[in-house]
Length: 438
Image (cartoon, rainbow, N blue to C red; front, side, top):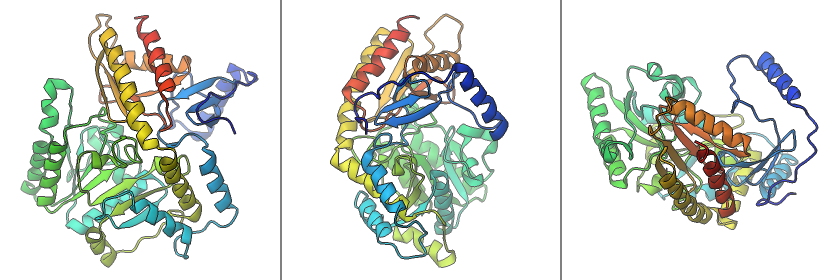
């Protein structure tokens, strides 16, 4: 097994570029027009280890984007747990299973004591969908408050709460959108106004005969541009929600599992007490598993009126993988690593900001970064196109990142948790090399 901290050794570059083009043509023919690939030159990946990925040509890439393999690509402990349980049994939660209950106990120990029950799905989208059903039962309402460029999933219900993916027109009439807590523009006043925006959204619902059901927030405001507002603002917003008889749902699909460095969960960074916490992607470090954690008070009304069953949600293999992921986070001190390396990378990126005026803002919490390109240039090139060009050039130089935000001008940097200071140096030096050519 290759080292988790060293690059994968290069292999002979056997496949040709034309082979990749043929693969893209085959992909389009078989998957149809909806699927999109990353980068103008899509990457044909064949293997990974730790923070490294390798393509079919033997090129090695530093992964500074993927939070799905939270503890690193193909971590040997996770792979072994998956293979061992898969060789024994895989079935569903209508049969008794010790490994599933062992996982729930271990997962709940990472949460505040008020969150006492776990329910499992296969994806974060399903988890948010289920959370909405539970919230509607508990509150007796239908209205949901979300941010204006949020992304919460791909089911019918969650896609209607994902204007970041489909635009404002997809939001249902009984739901309301609010501006994300922007800590950059206008001196951060938008962030300070977030709680009042939530209050006004709730008032708008009640004035129109709509009973509020929930505030659904991604703790990192990932699609909105990646913001980390003051805890007091978030606590005030939560208070308005609960006073209206609605439920607070913390979407931890992107922010959870130690990424913020100072707590296991993003909502803990703000001192929030959510009624439901939704989980996905990093939960299985590449294996599909999702779920939610909920208070007994909120789940009680749902259980009284409805049942729940998910054939693959919470299966023994997924549970074994989930346990392994938590064990790696603990044994390798990955939350501490997120804090220390995140602080180091943040410092280096802010030094880069001083040298390159196009970087308007650097914001992060642990190993979650938004690097915003600002309108400083006189080239006539839009910020969105400049950002796309930058992300593609990073890919050509062997570092994978992405972009986000309403204008598409924010670099999204969210590496696997074992990311090291040496990895951070490579990331920043690659960025510096590209920006220095402007």
